[in-house]
Length: 416
Ligand SMILES: [Zn+2]
Ligand SMILES: [Zn+2]
Image 1: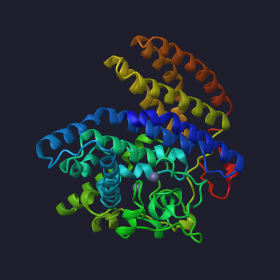
Image 2 (image 1 turned 90 degrees about the horizontal axis):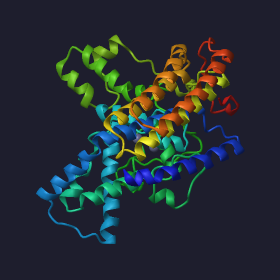
Image 3 (image 1 turned 135 degrees about the horizontal axis):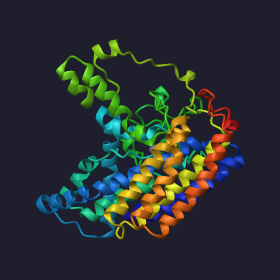
């Protein structure tokens, strides 16, 4: 967690540089709605992780003390081996995350963006509660728990920079490391690219276990998932597949299939359920990015609320030790509600926009009542600015227009 917390300023600096390059080159790799959803999902994931981050460490300690065959020294070469070995287990963790339905339900969040930029890297799941199981063998052979947690964090930080379209290919590196090009393939929904390139740092594992696919010039990557999310709600991004699996499991008449829905191969559905509730699979050429048109004033309002939410989340992460339980609850509630509410607004919900007025009044009061102090007054001030922008947004928005979805890959000028 500490490594990731220290990396946050670097993440935002690189996002700023990529955003500048995007505007300068007019590449259209960023859409406000999609980027906001990615960052909101990242924030929710970090907050949920606080609740269970001690579990892996505690279990590694117990496992290390009870059954470790050796205690490896803290030498530099042990760290290098730990880093490489962790990536090997990451490969299998990630591969199963795609191949088994219940694990895909958690991992899908990371793939639900239909854009590909550095914010996509931060679109992380809130549901990966059990992934620590994959790294237990490291504790068994004597890597210390601190080492496993640290190389795990470094592995995650490495994966950030590969989520960009501004770097084409990198020569010999393509053969050894996970690069922007071969990770773009991993985020594709094109048939030939599906279930390829699972590596975190090294692409060697994919080459070894026959899941490697280079990016092909004749097959441009279409980013996203076949069963599109069609929402900017980060909570729904986390629940979408669980909900589908629960429905299939409920409706199938076979008891073994009720189990297999969760633990079978991703995409498999019981015959009776897929007959009763068929899923239409349109050809990829028909794919359109989910992009409801909303008025610029509403987008600007959403962006401001998103920045305020990020500030509140950062304040929470940096002051966790000094905040009381009540204060923590007030901030977490604020961050969660603001993220979901903003997702609905970007998805063109009139109700969400209507609820913004009461929210802007209630949450600063909650902060003040919780005794948060100076930060609460800053939050209240930002809410007053928000209220003025909200009035403009409601007054000038063409909010009654029906939802339109547009293809953006060839129309960057449609950026919100
Ligand atoms: Zn993946
Ligand atoms: Zn990725």
